[in-house]
Length: 403
Ligand SMILES: *Cc1c(COP(=O)(O)O)cnc(C)c1O
Image 1 (tube, rainbow, N blue to C red):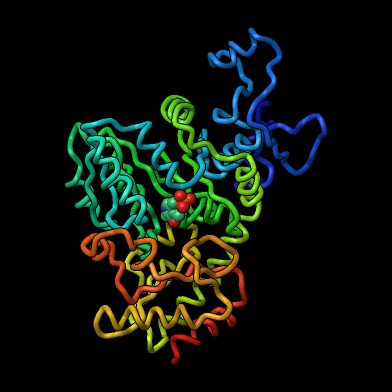
Image 2: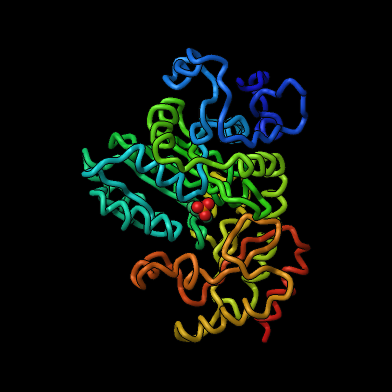
């Protein structure tokens, strides 16, 4: 089955609802969900050609599925990139990228404020296989440059805005550094999504996603993806996926495929709610600091507005006041435990506002040094703002903050 032939030059909002695999003979308007692990072959010869890669056609569920392909085509179209390879989760997308691009002796430069599991995977797990890594300050381009080891550095990996502090890096500056060193730049676009930010426009070579978050958008399934050139996807990632099998399940692919249709609307509405929450928190006497790219007080506000279509995204983090770290932690826990409407849940990207304490959850496995470097202090609370009425969101935070 080949991709639907759509006219050139369609806008991302149009691609978000139309880009997909061809319709079946039944003409279904909503994309079909193909729940099958195998495919019946027309002949032994055709089967042999398909397995050899000489003919298009599905052979086995680990290698490909039409519903999965629809999700990949739609996400690639929205990111403005040639191709996409989806995976079972965001972390398995990072693993696939690393297995596809790196070997023992290679070196990776990452931001020190990346997602906790990303730091663990690249900094510790890959080190066992001889892949070296350096972690640098997200916003310090000179530190990224200094960390590059000529000849050995093959990958620069950034996440912008970061989780949970929403630090924004200059994608174009990092892409230039990577390319001067003969390396590739991957951007984890989980927080901004292609609705706000298309990293390829600023020179990124690979765009990585946790589809679990905003692409699904309603907290239902796990998914991941790497968008890149056709050469990288078929040449570097597909062979690893075939042998290692971090394949996205067809059902999950169908859920995230349909999620993409409303991504732009959700990101606009949730960003608007997040801005209003951030402005309110900034004035709250019990709040020491608010991290949100849409606020003028954010360290990279101007860059964020330029890179992210003028919107700050839906994640707001704030530090609750409280003397020493133990007191700050107790105050943060009080805010979480007083919630009556919003969800105390370590996820993000849902229509429900999700509130979490990063220091004891997403960043709990890091050493205290790594946590300090990432700026994840004990008083920090992260809110992934959903679609509730803004007054109800503020009222729920007031319960614990105003005590
Ligand atoms: C959640 C997340 C990931 C990992 O994705 P999973 O789908 O949970 O494996 C990676 N990067 C960021 C920024 C995330 O928020």
